[in-house]
Length: 286
Image 1: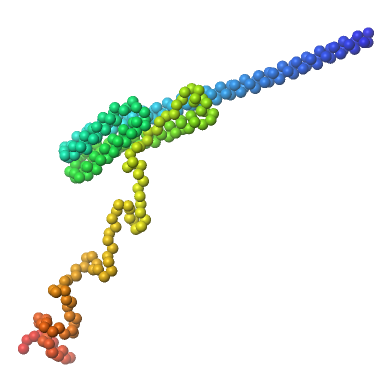
Image 2: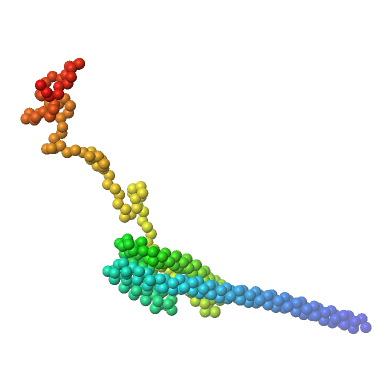
């Protein structure tokens, strides 16, 4: 009986050991599955958040571009009125008017193009407008015209709003393009076909030019003429230097006139002694 009981006990222990091992494995598998599911959930959440952020940035870029487009259309509407006002005072500046009209039409026709092409067309139009304003400086009566001043003020305000919108748009494009190139967001961008956006940059070299300042002379700027410095021995400005006939200097007081020269009118004859103390001076009478 004892051998049979010991065998049964050993069998029961073996079965319990196998059951505990099975339970341990099942628990380990459950933990692994929980970890995998948690990782997948985290990745899914990160994927959704990153995708939604891409969509939000793309929509923000489109909205900022629409704001620029509104201001560009406003400038298109102001240009014909400005040109007609200037034409009434400066009719012979015909080539400037034609160039502005041509570039305005060109800018209107590329509205559906990329921001780079729009920027190139707008840069040429801005250069033509700048040339028009330079031509206006030769007509003082036009600069005092109230209609022209109002149009010029509105055009300047529109240009300022375009510049502010361009900075906002380019900042959003920079953040968006950086996320497309950076890891791991570039994986999501490639998987969902998010493409890089184009910048709206100024192509006008006169706007990009940096003013050059010369420190050779205090207060001098490149292009500014420095007033001439007086030469040593030269008469200073504001003083009148009488020119003597013949270029000779007047004789000093007490100096005898040279040979062949006449004494001054009203002066004492040559060789006349000076007045003594208490005597009146010689007046030329007898």
